[in-house]
Image (tube, rainbow, N blue to C red; front, side):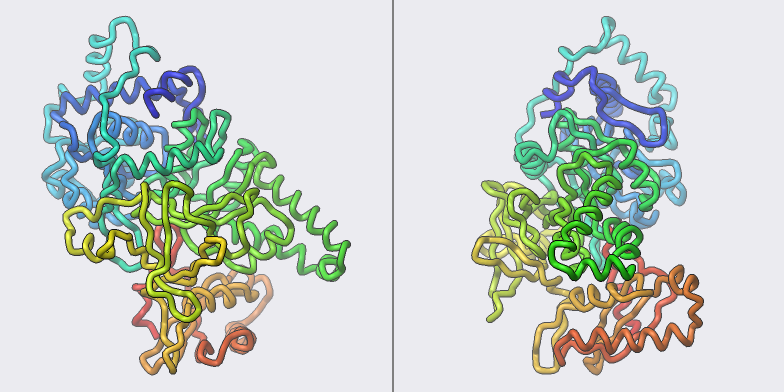
Length: 547
């Protein structure tokens, strides 16, 4: 795929570091890959050796990834938000021999802590940060000289050639960033990566004229598979946002670049909805018109067009993944016919399991059907409502967890289905609906299933609420930890005492929409945002002892 794409798109732009003047054409990307191949060979890197990369999204990150898999080595992407001690553990656990890392992520790490690593190289400017090799021989000036000696007539499209690799070989070891606090190394064969990339191209998500704004972390399977791997394989152009992706920065990037497809986690879309849409629909004239048949279609059309233009105006659809989308937000976007759909996946499937495009009949609150011809899905041991654990198998599935045979054994059923750890149900058309995590599901007083994510979605829709967590006290009462939106609170002039009173009224309002066994007994205010994974899911395990 990549040999062909680099050759056929030689003069076209491949990657741009957004906010800078750095743009690599496919030809320049191929040259940089070849230089890294020379570095790998000179360093003694062999087939199936591990090479780790850690840092913010940039063109050098992409170069390292592609150079590694096309050389025959195994890439170990490390999320830039991991703490230094977690990164050290992953580097050592994976046995990485080379480390490419942003200067800021190198702080807190030194070569003595990672004894298998021969050299650490800066992702900022390719300088050797630290090494156990001869610095006179292993620097990029020396590598550039070796490149010129190897290719005295220059390096051109016809020179791009990578050794054959079986798709059964390991392509990456990707360490999970889940909410349980335990990170495992997912062994992903090249076949799993190829399955996602092929679907991305055959579905029309990625094509030669694609323009992607990449703000999801590339070290996470979701952004890596489609913003990067599928886009480059198809010959598209991806702009890499290395800064914290605030709505302000992203809306500016969307307006400038006019992406053809947008991949996002729910938090980004929910923030934009809350800032742009909610103030409009709460105004008296608009809120009244939205209740009038036919007139509401005019208002909905204007809101839809405004939102489409805010995202650049030229995208086919926005795809939401990584976490559940707030049902109220999804319902309103569906009502105004905004081109948005929700997918479902996990790192262990690199990541895609289910998806149905917006224009192919995706259903409200569903995350689509299993990828046709690629993945299968079924519900294990469903209850009377058809809810049970979602299990899957197919092209995108991992081999197992690196150096963890017990976790690998536990993650598969005896007949080879991968346990997702998610609770869901399938409708008669094969659409999957996620109810929550197996590990977060709570039991009511008479054994009823309680899905805290559904309750939290209702709480989060209340004014002055930024986010919430529903936990169970040892006496089985439900407690809601609520982080208020302090900007809204301050703007309203509300005192702390008034805020406490408001939250009590909000508790009663939410309870009026819940079954008796789901009632919230207590609301506790939490002073700041909850700690999250890079895909913006709350790390629940940090808060279970706070009620």
